[in-house]
Length: 459
Ligand SMILES: Nc1ncnc2c1ncn2[C@@H]1O[C@H](COP(=O)(O)OP(=O)(O)OP(=O)(O)O)[C@@H](O)[C@H]1O
Ligand SMILES: [Mg+2]
Image (cartoon, rainbow, N blue to C red; front, side):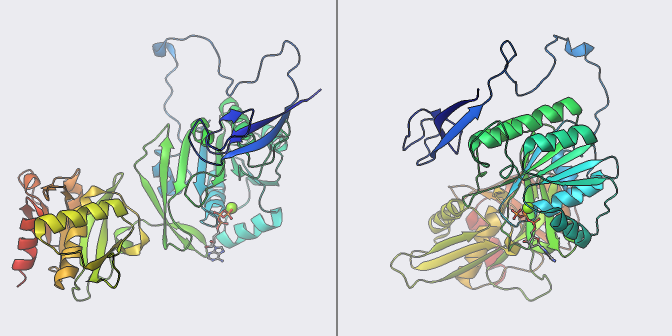
């Protein structure tokens, strides 16, 4: 007979308690403990409990383990392959998460169709009917020869279908809508999501199946459902963008078989998500137009890809008792620190000014190499003087106003030279090591020197 019990489970970290609690003792989240009724048929007497994975328990010396060349399966979407470390690894389970309507199902249908070029692929959707999926497939122009669809929310049936079809890949859209029939809690609850993920993990490892699991994220950007899911899967890819953003950035938050600092850029078009290869074109406003106060260009490095970005700033007299500070695309706390450094070291009076700082094109970046450009964009707007044309600024700014060197300066400068920039302002410490790169590189050691080089010269 099935045992039923009621537990209060934290929807954030999965901590279970027999009593309701206001704050989760596991992750200290408030009001996250939700009652769940769990019932599970007990294992037949003597049968072992089910494990997360069914690996062999044989002890083998590493040297004896057969060394096979690493098999990667390409999704034929360059940006996705690069994020995964050169393609998906058979047996890998990949979680693709993102806010609603960002394009998760679109990207996965494109990837599934591409994978189907090398073997069968099963696309299981609990969110859309077969007709809806096929009409999207028609719009995206994807071929359906080896791509099989199932509209199902019962995970046992999906696993059964996958076992019968023996596909190369499986897409589950989405983990929050499917349920494990052995549990009575509702779909999307921690217990359900965890059990479904564990079941998929067993399937993936046993059959060397590439599994893509789609998941929603909540408003605050965390995965809807449990954090525990992130521990179970091999890779977590996350759409770091809003639906209205022109460019949608996909980042790897965790990756057992590849890098985590790469970013994949996509643009939503009528024919689906298309890759953005020339990222610099998106993030720098028209370079041919006359210089304007408040603009400064820098080169950010996302994983192995350098891309030009434009910092913009607007500094105006405030109408509020407390001046406003806003940052879009950059971290607000970082911008506050930079503003304070400029007040102190440049003597820029900002206490009666509102300061807005943003990155053009809706991109969000955390690269400290953009500090110098952000600072000089603010100084340029404050002085109402445009920076010289064809100039990039690359450097991290510290609390003491010093401009320090940044990693991979050479590849950043090469990207700027390729895009037609003729001058660069970088940390003075980095100038000596640089080979000739086709643009004039000047070094500054602090904010004061940078402002003197830019504004005194432009007089
Ligand atoms: N005909 C079209 N032309 C251009 N873009 C379209 C078209 N139809 C849909 N889209 C885009 O596709 C997006 C929806 O994509 P998709 O359904 O793949 O998102 P999702 O992340 O799977 O959403 P959900 O979380 O609801 O499942 C819409 O936001 C829209 O921008
Ligand atoms: Mg979807």
